[in-house]
Amino acid sequence: MSDAACFSIARFCATLGWQMQAVAVGWYVYALTGDPLALGLVGLSEFLPFVLLVLVGGHAADHAERRALASRAYMVVVLCALALLALTLGSDRQAWPVYLVVGTFGAARAFWAPAMQSMLPGLVARADFAGTVALNSVLYQIAAAAGPVLGGVLYLAGAPVVFGACALLFGVALLLIRVIRADTRPVAPPPIGSAQRFVQGLRFVRHSPLVLGVISLDLFAVLFGGAVALLPIYARDLLHTGPVGLGLLRAAPGVGAGLAALALALRPLRDHAGRALLGGVAVFGMCMIVFGLSRSMTLSLLALLLSGSGDMVSMYVRGILVPLATPDELRGRVSAVTSMFIGASNELGEFESGLTAKWLGTVPSVVIGGVLTLLVAGSWALLFPGLRKLRHLR
Image (cartoon, rainbow, N blue to C red; front, top):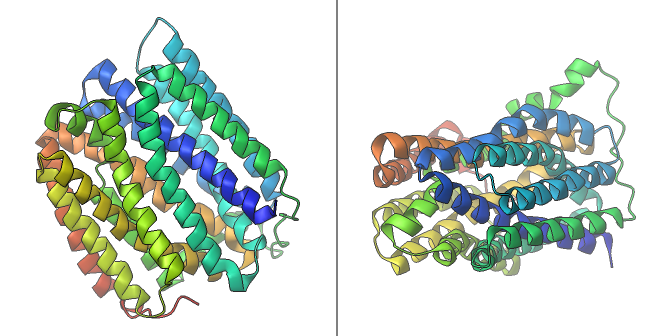
């Protein structure tokens, strides 16, 4: 098996386990507390350690052997899944130990994310990189779609079954990363002071308008428009379904994104990439408004599916533009900055969703978030004219 295949399958297994774990943790915590804010705290618990350590992880990815760094992080992730298994088997059912384990998971992700992102360009030829990104996007979205459904179905047999399966998947990912044979050591960094070297990724992003524009667009669009944390409330209280229904709701964006990724793999963006990017974010915002107002399971699934398709365009453009625009000696640190932005949009967005749902109600929280996402798309078209005019992804 080639190194690129090992990488792709490992990432697929890790994503599948991550999505299964997320749906199980969400349902478990909401069943324990019945509080929307508790769901937001799950996202915050993962976000805080991640954002505090991800620049350290990026620095490490540019100074250590990337395969070894990713392996150690995956080992911690396996232990986190086993800890959740132990907690759900115990008799003392409380939410706070779950937050601690999720926080440890976030800390591990701060090291695995930049290590994995900076590793891939060294495993394939530059000419094949766009196709490899598209293929990995398809696999990622298949896992993102299948994981929640599989997690919801397995949850019918009990939360311990889900977390045991997650530990197994993370273990497979760990083994596959360890068999990669390529030299994944970074190019020697330039001889500058360590303090300067640590923040060089931030400096690179700040002085690269296209890179800054594409990752900050994703940050604010998903921060305001995401409703993942509130899906257990929609599933149980508004759409009147169970853990399997929750799995379908969580899977729908992944299905839409997977279909969009497949289309992009077959017909890559040849022109007007910036317009496609901004249009995808606008579609995402409109779909979240429809989802927020829907009381039909079919319409809700369709809205989430289309939102995933719009979001996939953003992921595709970012996944090609950022690595190819970044020198190899900076890829770990720039990947860390990118991961920090994405983590803020996802986990911090979950906390924002839980908090606004607590204050304003679940439905107004989602609808207002969709409106704000539309405003972000329009504002970024004006603030980053180079992004709006971007044509080719070279």
